[in-house]
Image 1 (cartoon, rainbow, N blue to C red):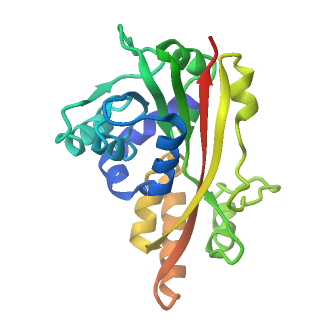
Image 2: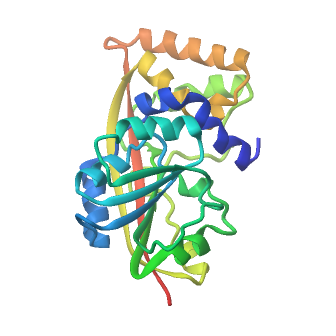
Length: 263
């Protein structure tokens, strides 16, 4: 599947996505607020809000948020979860084609969604709707492997290889603080100057069913053929059942990028 097809898969598991995906740590939200200067009353545009995971803490702050979400199911989940915040407007549509009207935003941000937006237009679209003193910010939650991290993920790769879904031979699990930065891409657009880059990481534990629910929200696993997915999931259940607590530890990492528009 290409990028357009894969990014559309998330809406087929909208309810599971809302339940299974991790929240972002308070430290990440604090870093976003500190580096962008947003606060109560700030006007924000969120790109690809999903079920509203990153929207909620900013709505609680009193920000006025327009959240654009491609999937109708995910947008409905976001509206339900954010119903108590009248200053949040969830719009169904793609960021690439969404008409911003007369609004100028203090912040355009995306949480685990920026990489799904058409790279030929995303920086121009963000630049066009920002105030001169506004900011663009984005990050994504990725899997990182710290020293002493859970070896489960390396061990299970033999099953991914068996079903034809293995990682490239030269793949290395990044350690916290080693995820790639996108400064060159941002500034290469000619539209933004990077003002801050912050690496953050956190850990979540899962039992077998909670971990499989998480996998069910990843585009590659959603698109996986049923026999391959059944083989993989059965092996995950079996291997975790052999552990005394039946759980695994997954370490997450994110790189928060903040950039100011050039005028």
